[in-house]
Length: 91
Image: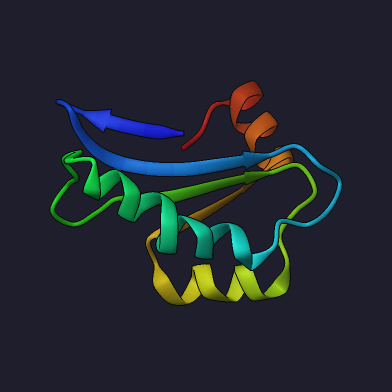
């Protein structure tokens, strides 16, 4: 997924609807291949971004959780959090 603000990419993400925990490789692939390919395609990015959002039905592996915490530009959203936010609104 890609989020835009005035034709500028501010958010990039992936959604996985499997029962397995999302592996670190999903984030590594975004960093190593997908985001650079978008940059090569002359897509404009926010100066401080993009932020990365990963959605997972099965949760996240520990190494991905630690990496997201270290970086600060990666949000990990579980299906439980997504459903709760949809039903109750997010703060």
